[in-house]
Image (spheres, one colour):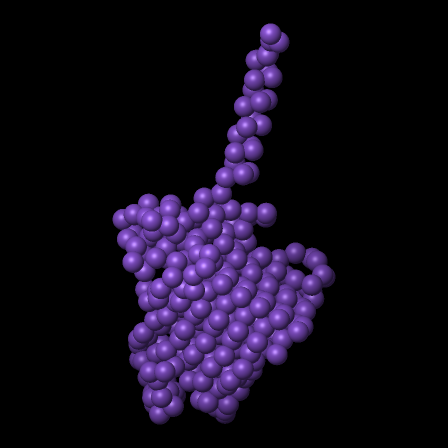
Length: 294
């Protein structure tokens, strides 16, 4: 029998640990009929809220949304994956989950993390319960010096915001949003600011931005941030279907107030993204690819 020396055992043990770490990737499961008291580790013991799973994920994990309607308030995705180990939020195989809400909400999904994939999920806004006259009243209240944020939140809800904060040095990178249906939000459909390495592809985005007073669009990429010196294609918007996204309410933040945006897709303000070290802004030097959208 061959003798295994101690140093050989150590090398074998390290190899097994590395293999196990590489191969094993934790899945979490969420269902409207679940419970946040469950462990969320199987499809028979799912969490109830997406927020619960989002607070537990680590690089390489997948959060599966099972069938049903999720109406649980805003969802913040703040935990990042890592290169080669994206954190994925996706539909459970064969299911068609929907995330929606009622009432006052500024953003439904906020992604302030990096190395994230968000895919195969429907997001439905509240336009069916809103009216033009109500949106105009909200605008007039704000224009008159009001501060009724609860009212404004009803008519200015964004679906997905990949949301950096230049003043705090938060810049999401390597985020993919794909194969989602995003519709009937009073403000923007899919938007990003202060982000880099963003892919938006294969989505159907419609009936958004009707009632906002902040000039939103179906898909909006604004104030893109240079996370490195690469001049390759880093912002990709492709194979999306966008229709019936429009603004009906004047933009309250400009003078004189007037209708603006309501685009299907817009790439905006790449020439000057303010950052903590340069408030005047610096131009985005990466390339942006917009192709095969209808």
